[in-house]
Length: 502
Image (cartoon, rainbow, N blue to C red):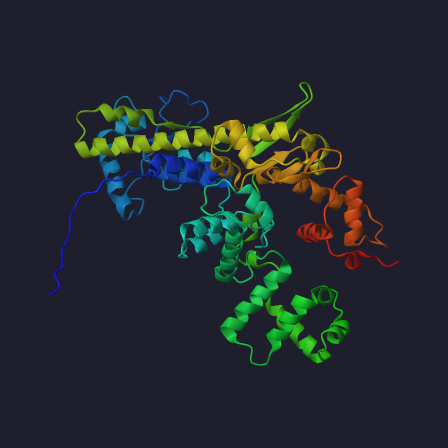
């Protein structure tokens, strides 16, 4: 006879567990937001938090009657948990209307007409509505995928590098180098490749997160065949043409393709006709033209008097925030019901947290930018060819923060400089030592390569090996295959397609 025994004992063990407080989570979220998204977040908080308000011009004291405006339940449809809050606000408004209206005799001021605009929102009115960015939409898709934690975080990291066409704009080696200290378990090239493969198979529309346009087209063909099949072999032919004869296909050298692929010309033409269903820009299907407008987070200017570059946040369209003094004063009112006092306390607490998080974002971003200005001085003086390697770990050590903080601070941020607009992340990359003993970042090497191609004789364009030789003459020694990789990332076609016939 089997006897089942239940053993109930208490055991105590030691272990380290990190549990982030809501305030810390909010700070990290705010730090990572680019300026346009920060504006939206502030607008949302202003709409739902009675204790939060903008500091309007000439309103430093908060006693001129420009207090917070309260939503009128008769004019607004409120559902869910927010309805209870708005009902409570309406009740508080009826008892404290003289405070909110700023009228000493207690008489209620005439209600604003339905067409009047909320004064709190006036400062945000000049900001156009913004749809979700491509990266944000891809992250939304990825969030619903059941994946191990390290792969889920790696996927979000890779999505940060997507370009406007939906392609991966940075090689995995650079991603590995820039994200090696962000706390993802088993961070490695193998993890990146495995995660990228899953992203490419899952994200919709097909072709996203490809490393080249050629790879994107092949991914799209795989998706079509998976859903529709390939009974007549037309898609197989198309895959062969794209995979093995891509350059000739671009140049429309169909007879040459037919000969090299040992395929009848009519089959080549039929396969090419099928390709009209494919796109070179899968990301553009998700993002409208308006969402591609870039708003700089940081402005950099040169001061000739001191021979220095100075930075300031481009956040003038986000006026300072403060706690509504009238609402804060109600915290100590003993006449308020317990639930009402709790509601006011929570509103003030939430508003304080948001203000602190926005201030922390400002301070952290400026500190990071100042390190960039100091380290990349030659870039600002002479151009992209003089970018130096700048690992995020080095900046984190210098500032005394975790490297993840630096990564979030520069994520999706843009910097307006005397030399143009640049993504802030561009200033952080690895590199190699030149023959003269100096350091050059990978971005600087790409800039030099671009300069060489632009200066070449278009009647006799340089082959990839000759480009490698020309780079070596400028003190940069890299392999021909690396030249090919950088050339493709820059969108530079091979020599035969750059040739201009006289």
